[in-house]
Image (cartoon, rainbow over all chains, first blue to last red; front, side):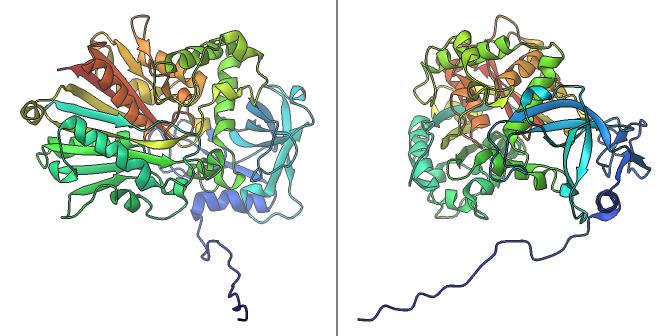
Length: 146
Length: 352
């Protein structure tokens, strides 16, 4: 008896639609594409980066954008000795809460460093851009020590 | 306000890998023991059924529908589901009873976390534009929270290690625990860091399993003639999804929920806290104002086994067990959801 032909079809799991990111998230992502970082003023005047659409305390709609610096300081960090496959780096790195200059609220991103003890709370870091920016959070490839 | 009686609680063992056992097979033995404890035959004997689970664990849409197969839902039953921990299914069921639409309810939660890479799966509950695309995992987020507390001098690594040691020791008397034993704080501190500053022991294990509770009006519970404890209050509050916007060294939502249910209006004999990381137990104990008179996590808590989507309900069940056993008169159960204790629920359970 001859072997039956095995039927197969390539399949890629993914979202096959596009989403509008709206006036706030969209503004932030568009700024990233242009290699700048914007935040938004909360009801109490604090600058939130990345920007939020509504103030979590007052539920007020927010709209006053502010460009912030591309350097900032580490507020807290976690050292990842063994990166997971999904992680943005394949060698040890840190996740950090980074408060950018001109911002009052830290953002979470990754920090490239050779060793854990080269990092510290309060250390200065700067954004490193991806070679090609497309309007995505990963346009900031990582932060690194200044 | 009508008190609600808890009449039965059962859970499966917390196992690191249930293998080929599917969700229905995880749930069915637990439900059978729960029905037996309440003196019921099956799901037809209660007015309402509500479950808690998460499709992301199974990696399949509407996976909770499979769980309903464990009920034998023919003829049709009144049934609902929360895509959350089953503690929130208990909340829904209590509302159903208080609205007068039911006199009794079965609540169950289940999850098989072992097939996926759980910390990465959970990263997809984060902000979909700013965080989820980075795949920042839940352990790393908790590690940043712990470091912030250590930096500010709110806790020490020894405080964290002592939580682990007590949890392991308490878990020795819990037949369903996955991790237990005599481990000293020094032993924990001697361990190398995992996602620094956390050590592996500071993090709850990944567990598979299920648990279930039967609740009823006090009148119904008396009719059934089984020992019961009463739920005096339940409240839950949520904080911003933006972790930079909240003080992650504290738990404001826990404080608010605790105040709303009057946690400190009486002695708290026992507290079962859903703290997936050792430092989070310290945050919660402080936010709840717990003192020396309270036995915290006598079951070992989730550091001894974390039935994701059932652990919050299990906390209520553990407090119920201690009250009907006469070991405690008043206790509180805490459930959490979201990264770094974003959403918290407090339940006060008292002796009938």
